Image (cartoon, rainbow, N blue to C red; front, side, top):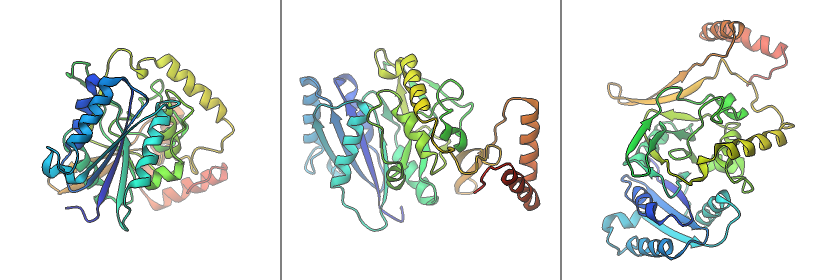
Length: 332
């Protein structure tokens, strides 16, 4: 039992993908746990098969509908109207939810979106809700990336290089070229963090999630749970298949942002590694642990080893901070 009410705000941007829509919706409304789900589908003007499915789900998820006891905690809505981009649709969806959800003192509001061809795993919301309840200072989590074929076959699970160092994430280095990207499906954040960054850049078509993570990392670290929270379906014709255009949009945005102040106050690349969290049965709790990473080159590796060793001691941390201040690097 969670100590406070957790409300999940979920948005699905939709446009003519009826073949996967039912699976996607079912993976959301079928989540079990002591929390409320506010789910909105923002459709960009699909043809009749998609609209019919949306109408069917609206009927099924009414309080008196066939989902029975589940229906009282699932609040479903949908809108069909033109949008400028997928991220414009997602922003509209969240704006619509935030206008309508009841807010109670002490409530925890958790947000994410899921595309019409992806799926959440069973009990993904319960996992996120319980972790955030156990660690109230954390506000941003993701799971292990897991790929699914177009036919639904689970095809791959990424285990290596998991975890995302905050400083590098804020610099935009997790772009799929230098470092593996943060997968959007299975990434959750709190309403407070969303408001700090001001939501999505609706002018972007392909790299809006990368831009959102970059800005979020200025305010919080991303905790990688050692759990599969969602499946990303790979299929022909999807926007994410064209990585050349994705990187072109990303690079253009980086150039426009070149005049921004440093990504992080105290760019602690060696002191602040990537953070993982795993449930330890013997302890009965989530355990956070840092994942250190090495930079290229002998001197960088030597420097990282020294910093990692010295940072275990108060005197070492004091020397490191004094040195960085001398070099003009702010340390928070």
